[in-house]
Each structure stands twice: as C-alpha cells, then as structure tokens.
Image (cartoon, rainbow, N blue to C red; front, side, top):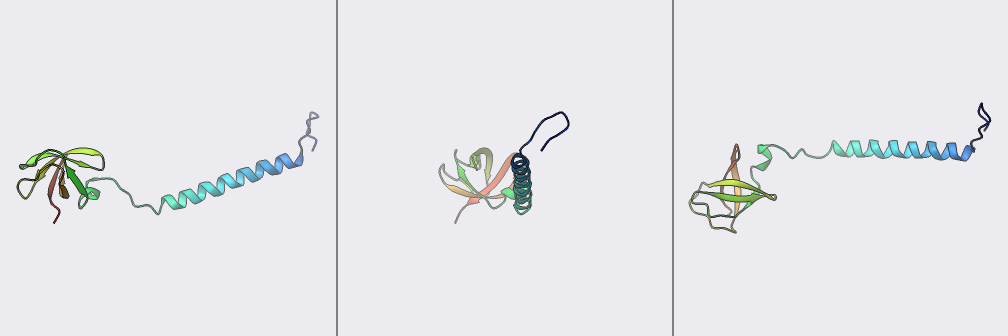
Length: 102
C-alpha cells in the first residue's frame, strides 16, 4: 500500500492492527458486562451479619477484626473472650455491636 509521500505499509500489518483493536474492544465490553453482575460490597449495611474475631476481651467494649480491619466492638451479650467468633448485629459510626455465634 503506497501512501502519499512514498511510505509503504504491508496490508498484513494493517489487518493485524485492526484485529488487535477489535480484540481489545471485545475484551473490554465483556469485562464491563461482568462488572455489572457483581454485588456492591460497601457501606455499613454490608457488614451486618458478617463474622468477626475478637482480639481483646469484650466486657462489654473491646476490639475485633473484620476482614483484616480492627474495629471497636461492643458485646450485646456480656463478656466475650479473645479468639471467639462473633456476628455483627449493628454498625454505629466506627463501632460494631456483636453477639456470640451459637
């Protein structure tokens, strides 16, 4: 293929570039569609019902780890020892209210 100015481009290079662009667009559209199927996992509403691990004794206040983050935890059922698993019942600011898993 001759362009103005005497530059020659092989037609296979043009086809290869077009195929790469099409493949990129197809992959991008597929990833975009898949992203819309994922459940949003943010906000305090998402934490309710999750499991946390107590790190310091809750009597009634202490700390617990939820998905790798440390939170101030308040027991709704009395004393809970470190290492026990609890369920998150309520989130208020940066505090979680928990109860023992039965």
